[in-house]
Length: 178
Image (cartoon, rainbow, N blue to C red; front, top):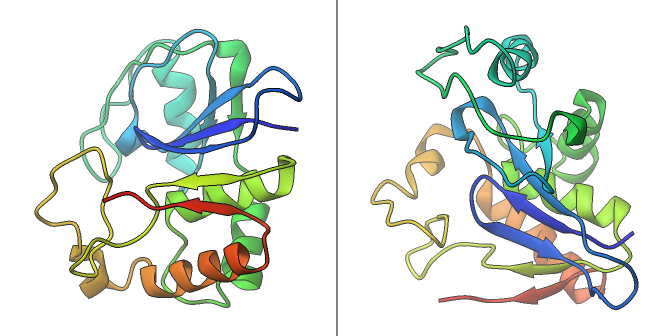
């Protein structure tokens, strides 16, 4: 399969469109939720049980407004195109690919591994640290971009090293941004 994966708001992993029609997947969790186009597949990464309750609420009644922080209570998305990222696959990525580094994988790394497993070709754009070693979303100005390095939530250096190894082995193709 070829496809385009969107993480959070703008990160993309894509395959060549000449083989088959492209399908856009937007990978998110409640705290990063936004409205989607009707033809976009929503891939929910459930980091906690409440996230599964949230997706039902967000597509129907809008009753869940808070997880550990305020969340968007309602989103526009095609209910027939909702996929749930398997917690078992998340565990597999954490244990087998990251070897337990960090508390859990970043959404970008989870998306990369999903694409690697379901796409024939994976091209990665804008993935990695800036010139100061801080990981950031290339589409936003985030002055706290490197804050997670101090919390130990994600091990961005380890994730990046695995990503570079995949590129060196020609399993993915990297396109570096700024």
